Image (cartoon, one colour):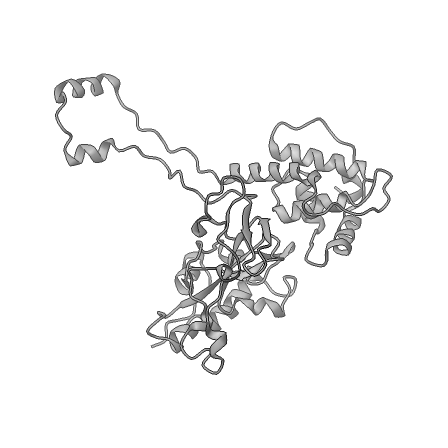
Length: 347
């Protein structure tokens, strides 16, 4: 289908959340001048900067009922709204504009439904046999083996916070209060090699090979008592889903700058600071429940035609991302599990 073919009228209303979102996106596009993919892409960069990447592949996915991230969806909706009903340019809605609330709410529901685990299989119990055993046993206490078999199976009721959860916290110096969605951003040591490359120049697998060759044993060689061969330190940061506005070290993890010998010449720089150095402990904006750092969402990073995230080649090549505040990763074990190149152990 050509781009011009894709600019068509709206079809019948959809019956599920993703199709409903696609339907509303198509309708909004038609109402705002039915702009081409290239026009939308250029307008987004003009309005929001180069990080607002909306390649035709991403737009096509959104318009055709495929799942896209919140950042992409918000950029797309705000860009479409930057044309009026006559197709003329106008100011886009601000990030917190009330008109965007319905889009965020629906996206959060879609995301939550994608991440909920399926119900486990139920063990079939023969009712007659069960009643017979009950009669035989009477009210005698169950032994340990029977207790184990009678424990219900299922899933924990404690899950990561849903996307779109808002947190309230204040800047300690001024008392200024903010309400933001917060996420965790992971940066394994050396993964910033992506700063010198673009996805159309080098694949995620090639970057992986470069990275493990240089960094697989670098921490072990310098701090053999702290890191095993193959272990790479992971730095953690607290930020927004758009990776802007807030970017502070995560609490309850070791800052690499505090490792022995790193900042000996700059003792003040070796003092560990983190999010809680500057801000109060976040609480849920609705329930006032204190934030559990281990339930924060870890930001997905990519290295492909629609994403060029710093360090994104790791998740792109392996399909893996760290658990919240995970201190290290064994790159040899990770690479082997993903069928990728790993450096041989040094003797």
